Length: 376
Image 1 (cartoon, rainbow, N blue to C red):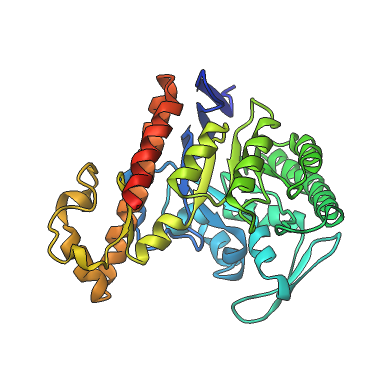
Image 2 (cartoon, helix red, strand yellow):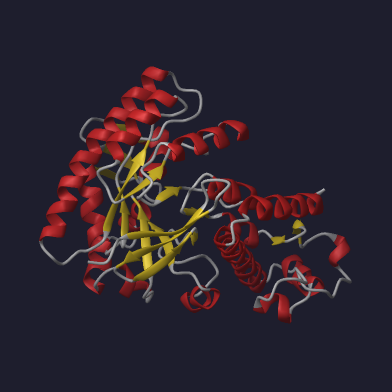
């Protein structure tokens, strides 16, 4: 039987590694960056764009798709892949973080979480079992358990309560997922989520409990903590997770955070950053990021990044893109988002190559020195 996750290379000087995840809609090379398609679409891009860049997996969101268009619509179509005409893999977030961000509109109990829709104020209840059922209807290749996320600055007592609830919800989600697997129709994987806030003893306890699933996500980061705390707990949590399972950290999309995650042994990550900043006219280059709207680009007929081979850099100038941005043309969002995603995918490919050649730390240092110098 084919392994779910095969580790191919380990860098000799850090925890960075490459591997292959085998999923129902094909193999995924790791490390991997997943573009975010919250509502069943990566904003401003077609599925052909994503295939052209080379993405093997994207992320969609259970909370948003449950509310609109709803599981009845997507289920009647035969699942999310058919609904959006995407024949590669999809990971779906359970909706836990979205519910977390709706603090005034939700109530967490041992049974699950009640919340009001941000769309029309209607009331809903999401249990760990229902989160699995929804994601099964979506046909997710990887689905996430429902968890309780806590912000930076909570007490250890509050962190314990959230961690214990997350663990109990995992047991319930796992039972439903196993039942779905036993039917022989749904073959998607379930990932658990490590919580514990910023208490190492709680992270250890949560990590041990999370080991029942095929893959493990590191949750509870990027919730308001300082950068140095984020990096410390990212590295620490990754170090206590099983070596043989893929590790996923949610919501990181800057080159610095991505490369730090890879160094710590993270295999998967996602973020809205490349497309959100692209829609705002902010683009990545190997010499740093910059805003297209700046006057210095008015007569600059060079590409966004002279070292980039994407179709945007091959065909359009900074001057033209600035003009599109200033006139609020939709094409600017399309082209800038495409370039940013291409840029990050190339960064990941270069990282994999550096790991294979045993020089990841050197690659990271040289890349970030150049990138940060260009932003000054």
